[in-house]
Amino acid sequence: MSNQSAYAELMEHNRRTVALGQVSGLVSWDQEVMMPARGQAQRSEQAAALGAILHARVTDPAVGDWIAQIDVADLDGDARVNVPRLARDHRRSSAIPARQAGEHARLASDAHGIWINARKADDFAAFAPTLERMISLRREEAACVSTNGQDPYDALLDDYEPDVTSAELSTLFDALRPGLVDLRARIAGSDVEVPALAGQFPKEGQLALAHEVAGRFGYDWSGGRLDLAVHPFSSGAGGDVRITTRVDEANPFDCLYSTIHETGHAVYSQNHDPKDSFAPVDGHAGMGVHESQSRSFENQIGRSRAFVEWLYPRMREVFGDFGTPSADVLYAQINAVHPGFIRTEADEVHYNLHVMLRFDLERALIAGDLTVGDLEAAWNDRFAADFGQTVPKASLGVLQDVHWSAGLFGYFPTYTLGNIYAGCLTAALRAAVPDLDDELAWGDMSSVTTWMNTNVHRVGTRRPAAEIIAPATGETPTPAPLLTYLDAKFGELYGV
Image 1: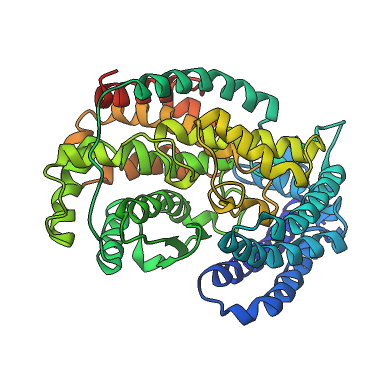
Image 2: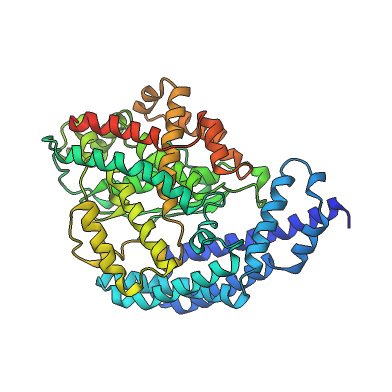
């Protein structure tokens, strides 16, 4: 078979595999958004069946044969990216037995429902045996896919950040942490008091505003939809990218900024080049890059003073006089700093401390230095040390996130990596669009999405994450732009 024929066969096989993966994603979306409670047992079997089929396709010996027949040096353009990525996926997946892949899919489906019920009951003990089994499975998978004595956690991290190690992340985080701790301490010593948001904000109004804001941030409603979920998320690709949010009628910011966050992910997924559909280049270079889009939309843009100038009159139109007298006060309320318990509701100063806590705990779990039986106490002790607060119940602590129920060990650090990347990208965006604040004050986010589309979205997986950020910003990614942004913003707000 010729080089060209082998490549064509490989890509057609991959196209169908990706399509089936998207079906699996729709099944997962349905489980979190639409599925009736009694469907859980059936859904577990469905997820396991799809997982086994996908695993069989990725590990099909024919894939290895096609790859072996292809000389990458003789390929042009995107083909030089597609083949190595498929070879990597084939190698990693082939290292995991089909039985194990199916067991993981079934357990993840079961674990989701168990986590939801345990979270409602504030009962970590009800979830602990399932988590213990998931950790055991992930350790086994890490042992299967690790190469050259690779650290087990790095083997799992490789699923989300293929070109980054936990040691490199630790170096970045160690450079970020002192600045955050110092800023937090200065704010804690400030005598500035931000008035609390008061009143009731009806669900219908919140969802209407969320719908409008997502559209202004570039979300294509002809290829998406907005629904409610326990834990907001974005899923899908190309012409079907769905977002979810949640509603608390006493706190409209949760709905609004969860929606903006997921819109950042969704716009990235919607704006890949259509000609790349179903090919390996039609993806992201790492979850840190993906997260940079959601965090820049949510924080540097969505929580900016200029955007709030547009948001304030819109909130008054939707909710009436809600007791906040001006856009300046709303800006302070949206950016109020307080050491809360929930990561997804955390302010920008505390958010990354939440992530670092999880990063350290999950590394210890995978290494075997921390047992599941000791996890809740370890979480509470670390939280008290980092935030100065006692965790009152498991739903505000160790049970608050969905990630571990799905076995997503290695995912959490990508949130802070995404914040670091977002700091770099937004600084470059502002330099490229000097009148950005004037546009944001009119509710016009087109320059944001256009710049990100050119510099990030359309690149796909053609370059590693750091090689996407560096050309766009003119420098190697560091925490410095993020710290500069946070210090300027919160220094002004709190007079520190």
